[in-house]
Image 1 (cartoon, one colour):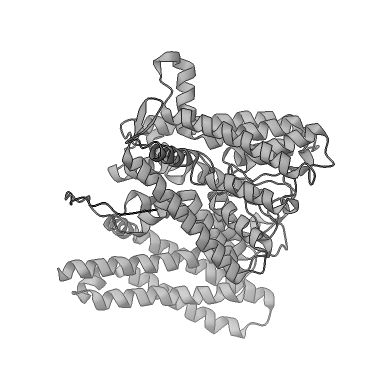
Image 2 (image 1 turned 135 degrees about the horizontal axis):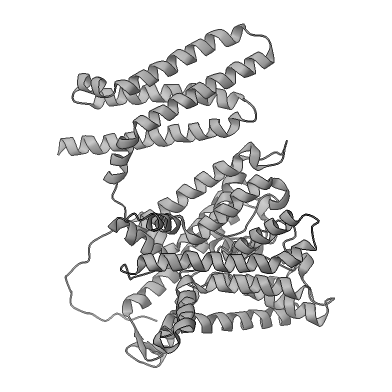
Length: 573
């Protein structure tokens, strides 16, 4: 028993030190190419102390200290080398007066520490594998860890000096916010995407959007399957949970179909965009890149645009509106629905149109029409007043579609009436469909909730639709999602209200937009304090993985109780 506790403590200590050392390693690496500041120097000194302190802790905790030294002599050698380099650096540099020489010695010192730290990571590879295997995580926790990892990694990429133009001021929290928004396919920004990042930064951002839209576990599973490797059972459960799939037998086929569908839609969208962007730029390569970036951003419902005003300049362009709407709606339908429709088209009546596909298509069409009509009647005498009928139609239709977690805009959102913002917030709260790249509580959840209320009013026992009965577990899950979503939005709104000096509708709209991973804003995002940015980042993260998934990841999974207690009625209402 004591040995198990000691081993568990040792695992947590190793994991903690590895995380700290890896963070310092990345920070120094990414800043080394531009300049050497006091921060990197202090981090370089700190990492030496961390490595030595780690060895001392393990030496004291190990029941056989001599055996520990004998088995880990390579780590001790690396620590000794770090201490020697640090000592020599602190002894030699103060004697130098030339700034260029000091900078050269500083870069050599940091580069040497990075090389030794990398060697240490290689030595500890097997130990790290043992640590990760010892952590038992449920599918919900695996989803949280995968998205958290890619967000942190993406923030480092965006913080690279090569990811932004020369002499551009950029704080790390802004890089973290942008990475979170990209991976969570939201589109809220604190800096202008087109000017704050270089071409390399735009490529990193595009890759993060793609990873967030598909899910890093889906991409990893696809690579594994393509290389002929086998996934572990826990990996299958985690990937199936992310994709909302219950069939593990056909999981690999579904993953291949998802990747094929995604790349096909994005490739077609890129080809559709090219004629428009060729008229915007003299360079063909620039036009192709802009087409690819916006095609990926639209299909993944990310809402990132390389234009500061999004697509307001193309409000009257029917072709651009059509391509964006087609990509946004397709990405929001969900991979399960797209696959079902594709198989139905190929195999005709041999493949049944599922109940989920019918519900998704009905609710999607309803909310697009509902949103467009409401937007038109609410804004026809205001923001739409000076537009031609064609522009009014396109603007109303596009704002209805983009609230389905897309985030692009063709009108100034900050100029909309409060009642219009409230109507749009309802559409953002419902969001896209399950298994899609969008957020919100999902269209099927809303449909099940309405169906349950109708069933109660009709005093019926079961929820039935299209001659199919909906399981009680699905109904309970829908109500749990609704409660969790409302709770997170209330909490986020209150936290922003306490810390930010904005109007209530602006704060509420921002919170719902973040939770629904929409990306529409009244313009307050860049003006948020650091605490406000953290609140919005949490809202985006919870909205992307799902509020119920977040709750399941936090709590410990309990086994199903096989005990049935006597029933007793309680007065409600």
